Length: 57
Image 1 (cartoon, helix red, strand yellow):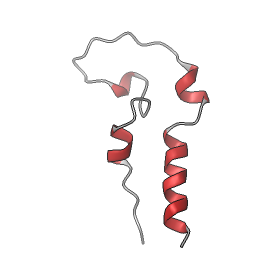
Image 2: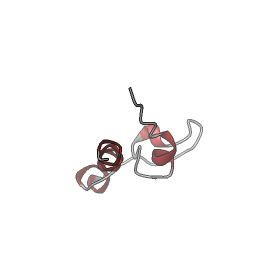
Image 3: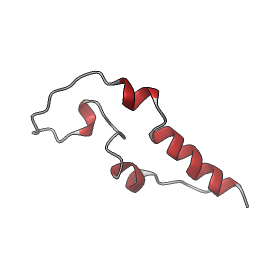
């Protein structure tokens, strides 16, 4: 069993959580819908690349 911890990699990506969960609770930010973060390659694609490197010898 191999686990892939993506926490550190996703903390480096500002688009890892572009919605309300990507900011500190006390931080005052304006929330808006942004297709750039969800429609283009992002965190999930990074996970796929890391998983591919783990699977390939």
